[in-house]
Length: 319
Image 1 (cartoon, rainbow, N blue to C red):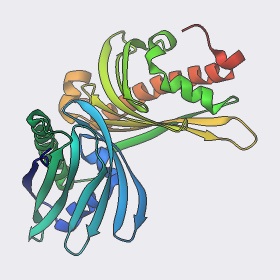
Image 2: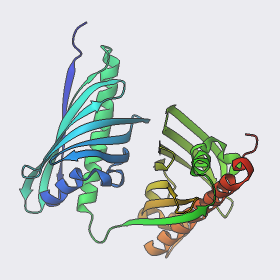
Image 3: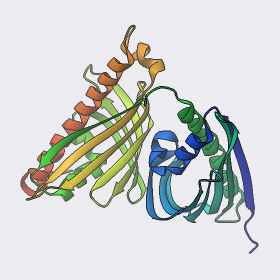
């Protein structure tokens, strides 16, 4: 069999922000879900000086993927090189680099380099990867530019809702993980579908009812981990948000039971405030509206998860 073809690409963008600021955004993967649309979740698995191993969960051509990459930071040269350690089909291997080049004190050029090959000799697989790289690279560079150039205070809104459960964290996790049953379990869910081609990596689509009786559709990628955490990012959003990431966190309590937290991070779509809420509504009012709506649904879910875990035999009934 002949060696699979290697393809190289380069994408670039000019950013009206200092190179140091842009490099910092690239270097800190914990901020990637808030900065880059394809990234659902990112973690540093291990770090040794300028070398690190990260795991990423992201969308590619409408599907959810996860992989690990080795990264090497060069703060002086303002570059980060990367090489996937464990790629997902149809990717056979992939690497590249982020390179930030100062233009002036307040502007820079960002180059995003990739080299990759397919896991097979099928040209269609290589074309699929190329399309995903082109789409994601353009999206990531535009998002990086928007984040770096954003003026004023941070526009992210983060808030928590928490309940205590005198029951098993495993039962709570089961309730939250098995979202395919939410239409029957949660009064604010009108329709739900759940895809899980890879264990722990879910695509969840729901029609959610609001207090006025209307419904809106959301689609999320969920990363379900070790019966303690579910992290998600909405990839189809309500009109009032341009970003919504979340986390269900289950923590043991001293003396027994668990604490269960729903955490939301959102960014308001200021262009749609008037359309959704009417004339004269401020950004602050829109933030309060979104927080109240999300907290209301989260608390309803948390309370039902609590009842499920505290009920006889976990509160389970026939599915």
